[in-house]
Image (cartoon, rainbow, N blue to C red; front, side, top):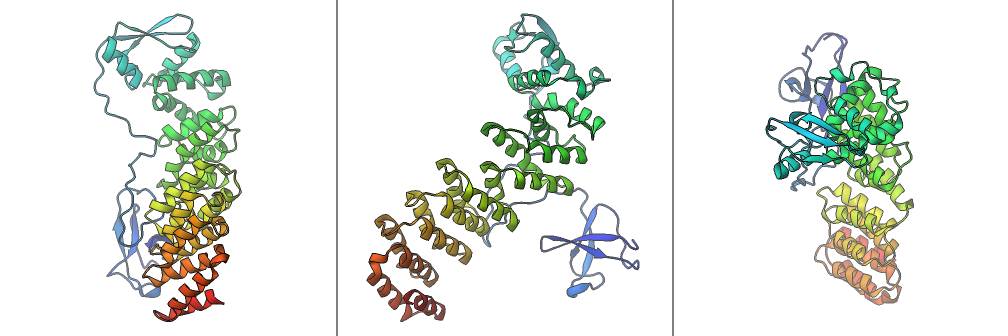
Length: 430
């Protein structure tokens, strides 16, 4: 296509290829990749057109080290958690009782997506009245109206017609019945109809539910707007965790605009949960942003434990490096688990991880702590000179009373082994 920029994927990075002059023609829905055949392009690469058929999710996490398998991650659709196979509903009528005592008779298929309803029917049959505490008669009637799959009941309804108090009651009832996705679907259509004025008056919790359960229904522009605005709302710790849980799948969206909005939201969301997600991101700036925030945030054992898990078990050396650096800022001096984990990382295959662990141990190792010294000496006696070198640097910093031991170990490494080992030993001795 003359004068059109086509995207090609080279080593995991997207670039725009200038095809002016009509030298290449392509159909929509595919990609250009380096391969044999085709016209020679810049850098000696050859390009050919490959039909992808469908857009693929973006892999935002750091890839595994060479020879390591990535951790299994459950596949989740863009709109939230996968729905269970609930089977066919029985013929009959359900009876719901509001807080004022009024009884609503509802067709079973209307509420069969509710796990609570299915459990009640399985235990007590259809004759049992199901009480709905704290749900007013008006709220129950409005909720049933929204759950009508025909959408005829919401014709003429606008989001501005729903007050914040009514939103609160509807959200409570949706959570009680475990029908958030069914409840959010008609509201997502209303958001699409009224965008860009829709955000006015929608509570932050409702926006979070829309992101988590109907992102596949929302228009891209509306979803991007909600992603950016939802992180600016006042929040509790539970709310912050829910927001991060809702936004995280979006940074793997096939839609580039949605990915960018979700990434921006997490970068600007100043809560620990968001930064723990960014520690796994393949973007260096994201990991650096997370590291800076974690070092400045209030220290807690919960945060230290989460970072320890990433440092000890993650399949990517980039994440282990970032987690090791973070431990140097958030773990208390002499923290036993952090010290043991960082000492183990001194033997990591990746140089970057060893250097990060070495720096963190010097930060939290204290002075002449026997537990820390014992953990580091174990690595200083390793057969691999890179491990011995990293351990010696730490030992020289945290054990001033063990000067003779450090000199003996450095001299032994200087007298034999690789040239780089001798240079490392000389630096320690200096």
